[in-house]
Length: 88
Image (cartoon, rainbow, N blue to C red; front, side, top):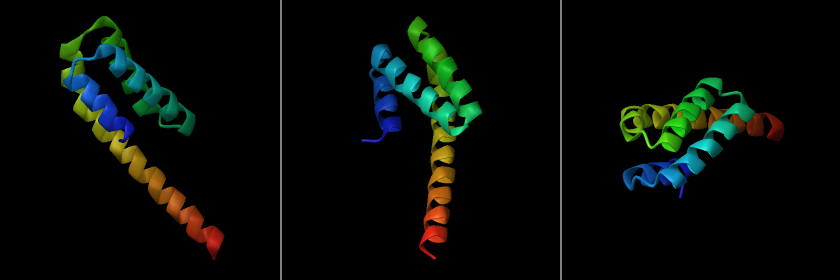
């Protein structure tokens, strides 16, 4: 199960503890790879989860997960490019 699926499932179940854990990990991983916007938006979701602000989470979750998917796609393409360069 992908991290984004776990986060989305926690949101649907309104399991804010699991949601906070998931978006905290997303925030940290995004920062490590230099995806600053994703990290910042995950931080806002994390803070909302800690407060139990379901309204904010519902309003912003899908956009952050879409950004996450875009970042994953860019990373996958970069890895593939570098692997092809290494192998040639």
